[in-house]
Length: 335
Image (tube, rainbow, N blue to C red; front, top):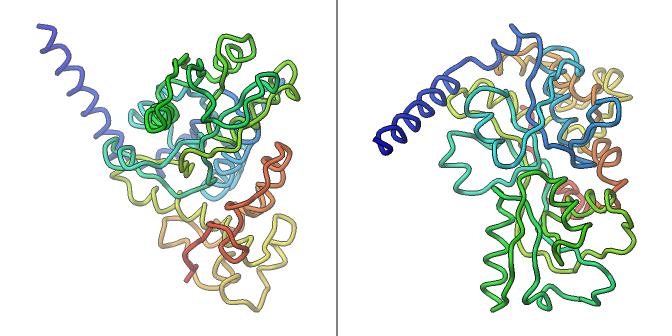
């Protein structure tokens, strides 16, 4: 009987996922008049609410840009805070339209969840934070340590791989909510806090004495973080993908939130195509001519987003520079 119930639940979920995937997400968003965006439960620089409930961060800016492109208003976003454990289910079931929540693009997630990664919004890598008083200079000195982390993440898997491959013993202390991990580490329930290095920089700001902690030099993984949408709805997938590309291309072409209107008169053909003053690329994705111009006016280009949200964490752009400046960020051409 238990097996039959389990199979029935799995089959029901599959039906729900299939139904959600077949839905016309663009039309549903227009009908509702709001974009439902899944975000973290609070990660400064990426998706974080202030004391008045206003959300900010680079992941939040992406959703604002998407709403501006589709609905003409960056404020028409409903932010849904999600733990790492339930984030994929929320998207699969249709509870949200897009997941923009510091989520790593992996083989298994890309092929086994019925979801599509839109692209990379932030290139990251996993690291370790410890108290300075421990005198630890390298992650290879952490044998026997208790390690705090989030459950349901690639972080747990990476820790296992790293410690096992280096012959180190450890104990995992895992929690579902990020703030629970921070509180446990700050209270001394573990020796080490591990997550993406951007997350360490963000969460260190929440500690009682941030200056008493140090991030170790090792980067033990590749963590390409990006938004996701459901598979089976290519129209919305294309919109989500090209809004991200528009923000990258805007930086490359020198288009900003402040000059986007004036740049519509540029003599540069790609700028004109991007902003809709030449041709009609929007028609190919179910939008009007000026969808990208609205997105850029709403949040700026990628450099503006980074400077506003991530730079205050003390994180240099590094590999998150454009390809033309020695980084990894690269958009296909608008033509």
